Amino acid sequence: MIQFKIKRMLQFLGDTVMNKLPGNKFYFLILFLLSIFVLLCAPFIGMELINPATLFSAEINTHIFFSIRLPRVIIGFFAGSGLALCGMVFQALFRNPLATPFTLGIASGASFGAALMILCGCTGVLLGIPTNSFGAFLGATTAMLLVYGFSSLQRTVSNLTLLLAGIAVSFLFSSLLMFAQFLSSLRHSFQIIRWLMGGLEVYGYRDIIAMVPLVIAGVIVIILKIPELDILVTGEDLARTRGVNVARTKTVLFFATSVTVSAIVAICGPIGFIGMMSPHICRLLFGNRHKIFGPATFLFGGIFLVVCDTIARVVIAPAEMPVGVITSLLGGPFFLWVLFTRILKEH
Image (cartoon, rainbow, N blue to C red):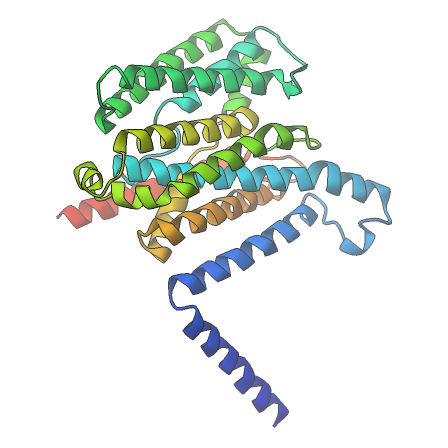
């Protein structure tokens, strides 16, 4: 009898939640709770599990948890969230589901900046940031300014001009990167290749202080521009008739996403496919309205990268796989699936 009452009570609570939070809101609640669960559990998982009961009693566990694993989870969550949200913005601006945060050459610029620092043998810390990350941020910023400079030569910044400028800048820095690799020694060449794989190898909270404030600032700007983004998706001409300053909105979104991606790539390297996969998956669950689709993409991207990094830390333990390898292994088939479904829809 008691079991029957408990079952009926749980059934009632479930029906109430489903009625109060129909459709998208219910999925968003699940996603929010899942993000909390992942953030709480991920720092305890690694080559060796940390028992929460021994977290403060064993000095080595305390050090590993607070100096290595917790900063890594924080960096992973904000990096994944930022890349996912920027991917959503690029897909909306270009109205192309295959657009990614690296479409405009920012990753290529950052890669060349980091490679140049490695090639020159610059080690240490500059302005509180590791020299590789500092060089990557400068390279990414240079790429961003070049793309905007080329695209703003026209009176109005069109998507086609912006895209072509991004492709041109990407090819430029990719060529310079190959030249830097050719000139580098075997040791430096390995360091460059390892950096290009992307990873979350952080120690302490210095990298968090360098990256997270810029990511949060970019995310806030994007969230504030979501109403305009919803209108821009329908077309620039229609957006103008509804009072949207298209040129200003695109410029603000361009700089917000570029700064966010630059900060992430400078610390974590070019981790691919997060910005393409996360918006697609969330679009299937939450639809095309950016009001709930945007925050959901933010949460999903963070969860996704933290889970991928947790897998990368344990799958070949005691060795560690770069998280960029995991995301690429998942992203390749996903890209083919998106392409295949688009071809089927056209026919």
